[in-house]
Length: 241
Ligand SMILES: *C/C=C(C)/C=C/C=C(C)/C=C/C1=C(C)CCCC1(C)C
Image (cartoon, rainbow, N blue to C red; front, side):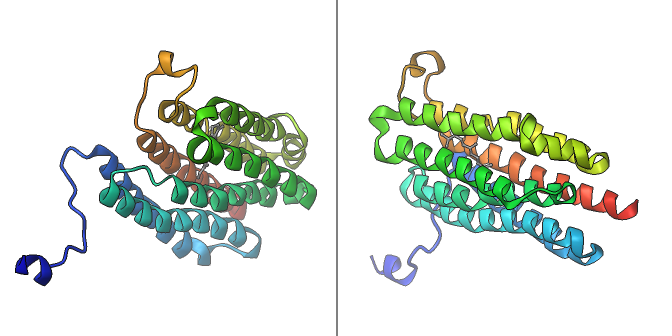
């Protein structure tokens, strides 16, 4: 008893078999290291590219802070930190839309394109949150609406206005835009899969249940850090030409 009072535990225990906790821990470190990398590289870029790389760093930095919260939340309660997860996404996914807008500005991208993509992403995330946290009994309906908004984003960048701007820009911008498009189509597809593993719906009999956080943590590392590195590479290349 006295021992408890003298040494209050400030850090939760992590079991060696807690692979969910492990991915949260690694997520913290990866997001922090990536942020340091992007921020410390800023000086090498001129003004035009500095903003884009700065946004890459902000995305991983915002995620790093949320990962520290989520890691502790998981360690303390053994529950999915759904609320912090969605706060993180609501901040970082619109910033990824900003990245698309910033690189397409050379071809004359307008803020209306940016707002359109931000609104799609907010619809995608708010309906996803409802399905996971507010009205899980109807998870598949919320997930479907969310999926439609996701589809709208993918359509915009692959075939819509954004793709036309990328084609007009050509060169390095077009090449990088294409890679980012693949991130959205393949990397982002991990999220709805995680959602289906974590909620109950008609798909549960086929997919079974799994840990939603492992899927989300892996997807975040791929998408946030990978996305940032594509922008970083584009900045390095464009500055050389
Ligand atoms: C850094 C965080 C990123 C890139 C998060 C992306 C999240 C998604 C693409 C989530 C999509 C969802 C669906 C398409 C349907 C089910 C609900 C969501 C929110 C998991």
